[in-house]
Image 1 (spheres, rainbow, N blue to C red):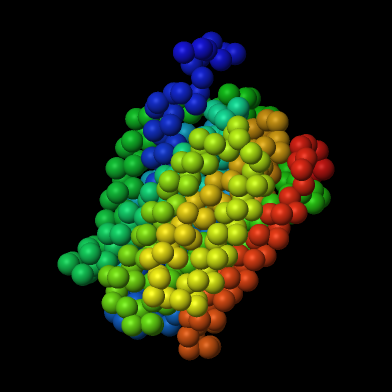
Image 2: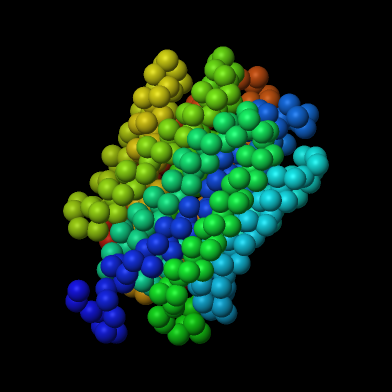
Length: 397
């Protein structure tokens, strides 16, 4: 094993670092994706509207935007391990409290605490990759993207079986208890994830004058509309078409499960073969076909979910790798990542509640799926217009 410049083993071959990265990422989506199949049950039990239910998805995304934008400041003060530990602790604690909430108002308020933890963790992960895997950003991003999809798929798969046996509250509690295990794994395996550059070199200035940075923001927004639109409302859309809750919930599990092999493929291939733009263009094209197919031929629901999952599994890690490719140092990547995730999540945060409101106004989820299809088409156009050379965007800040 050849050492790197610091005399250490190459960081992308460090087992504990990879374990820590993967474990932390698994906790980022269960409380958001896993709740989607439970929304019809929660609505009946708590007697609320689709738009209010949409807040359970909107609030975490808003928090992810706000706190991802502060990642440079957090790292400059605390490094990476302590904030990630605090983030996982917040997801665990507020997740348990939300499962025990007595009404929809309490659930909405406690969701804010969950969102803080999710947002902080989401902003830290790309910077950790830039610090520890500088020559293999696709590998590191693919690993934690696979972790996110694993958490999404498992939570979506177990939500309805647990809810049917014990109720929707124990299902939410199960997600939080799973995060407590992840917290222990992180604490054990994270020592290798120390910051390598002086903390004071991290700047909090965002590259707000960079056209390329806003190009990334636009891509991330449309990707968020597609992902959150499908994961939050696809089960309810199929229940509207006559499916039972268990079968409808399984579609989200299939969607997220199918993304895992693509994330792994991206991790193995995208650093050395082809271009990010080519991989993204193919993935966006497949996603568009999947969404249109879901709308026009729902009898092939499983096939469309598999196709859409494969596409989303390619898009997500590749988009997250773009700011790593465009910067030379982690201190440059952190503010670009902060702007992309911060503005991207904040703008995309209206998706769950906005699409829920559209369903309330139109009386059908057909309009919701068409909006997701339009977003997928726009995403493809933006990807095709990514510049060939994206270096030094931080210099325009």
